[in-house]
Length: 360
Ligand SMILES: [Fe+2]
Image 1 (tube, rainbow, N blue to C red):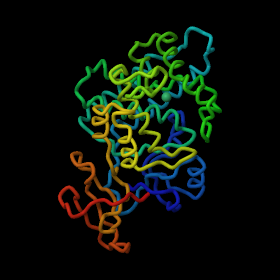
Image 2: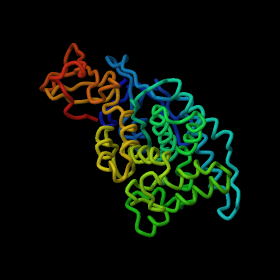
Image 3: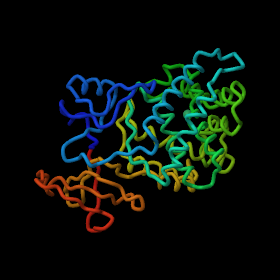
Image 4: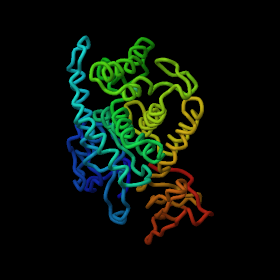
């Protein structure tokens, strides 16, 4: 498989991973032949890249950390949960959330992760304008739990509740006017003040209107708090911010950076991680940050990189212990001519080579 920019995607190529809508339903299956119309449609939807299957790249696997089925079931459940909240009267003191269904998918996320052992996120979670909100909620939960599961510091019950908390961290957004949530430009001060209320609204919905546990509701309340007290709504500092929130915040900031948004193109994972580093100890708990970043591939499999020698290569597989030095397949000469016989270099073993940049 290969991750390529839609601008260089030609009709006739085969899609490598399926594309889903905002309800978790299949729009384009993996293996579908991409037509000019599809490419135009994908661009209109806001995608800038897709995974394709191509001759010479068949052996490059892009593996998610949870099953496709679990991820899509989670998207569908979050979509339904947002619908239920939107349909409820804000003055009503109850919201009918399907708690059984929500804990069912949270358990599956945790079980998939626990069953697979220590993994890294080696996939770029591509999203469009339409499916962003729910795919984002699910990816925040997946990234948070990928980190938390592997700390070994939480019981299974805690992990399951933490997964629910991360899935529903933005549930308060369901009661924020859609023109604010989907605004393409910067929010004005009034709109920003309104948007910030999603934390308290989410807390109310989870704790008082649907009787979720306080620690689950706390993540909805605290996921915009910053380690140095500059966050909202309560300006909490360090350990006063619940540990589940300190992990969720990292995933919540990282995921949009690596997603295409209406106002900016997605960043490669390494650039997004460098951005997170700027907030070490100020925005983020440094210990949680170490746990988080050790589970993110700097150069996900199937992405194209340029070596220090100028040769263009594709990432074949990551070395989980040396995330900056994957196994790559060299495709061109240093001056950019295609090689007849691509060859592989394990950067973990050949220190004279390094990655200079990512090519999208
Ligand atoms: Fe939020």
